[in-house]
Length: 238
Image (cartoon, rainbow, N blue to C red):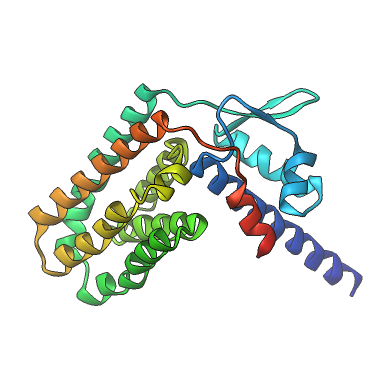
């Protein structure tokens, strides 16, 4: 029984590490953790209401993804992404996602596509409700699940990595300005086009959507972001 209890404890610790990592990614994406700034594990742990250990573990995971870098005896610095890097990530996503959406439009069943509608609608609901963590998670699940219908796991993994590296800076400010809703609604439009077997329309919609997202990044660069910790506090409340 002792071994089973230890196994359960490890599993619980792993889940907490994953939860912390999710909250930190959301805060990164929302622009609440600022590029170039060094954050300590104890400080973030206090915001999250957890011990420093799972925060350090989660930050090391983010470091392996290139999202942060360790700073000796201080904590972790949020890495900066240049406009050129954002453009490159967008170009790669367009090269991958647009033709994949076109192919899936013709090969996926109506049932498979319709199963994505709750996620598409959840993205819109979260955008209107200013629920950034919910928005980000639903958006991630929608895009990666949709691409997964193409049957290429490595492709999905690649896009997932590109999404992590091309963070949407200043999402909080854009959300407060009501600029996320139109982008959110494009997910429903895309799904409707795919269910209608309109390959050209679906590809054009995906191209426009990714271009729209890139324009939001550019706008976010120009808008000041308050040092709020909404994404972090959301996890603490949960």
